[in-house]
Length: 142
Image 1 (cartoon, rainbow, N blue to C red):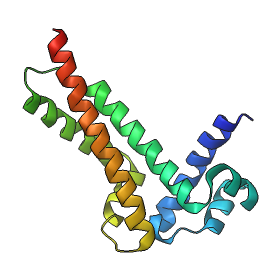
Image 2: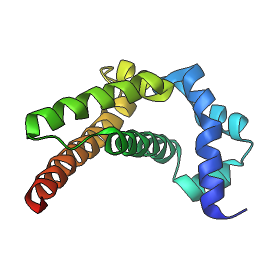
Image 3: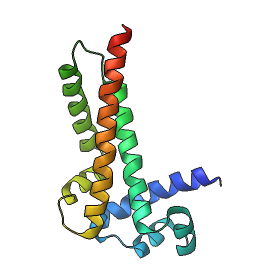
């Protein structure tokens, strides 16, 4: 199995464990049991629990923003585009149990959630700014 296939498969296999335990309560042992991979392989590919949780969230956010880009119809002004952006983001979050769990837990004050939230918030801000930038460039090219 190629490394990319292994990573993708691992992300899919960990999802039910996160749904069961949440981001704040999941342990390395939960992940090992859910994925049937060794602790050493988990550490070598993901750098540990935090790296894996971050990768799970990055995967979910990438899917969310792909959904937003696929659904957004070019509009005449940025306000209309941002309304679409927020509507499709909300739609995707409602369809993703992992993002629902993340958004419910992101206000917890545990060290794990605070660190994960800071990283994910930065990525979401970057992606929203990219959306606006792409929209403005699209508008200029018309």
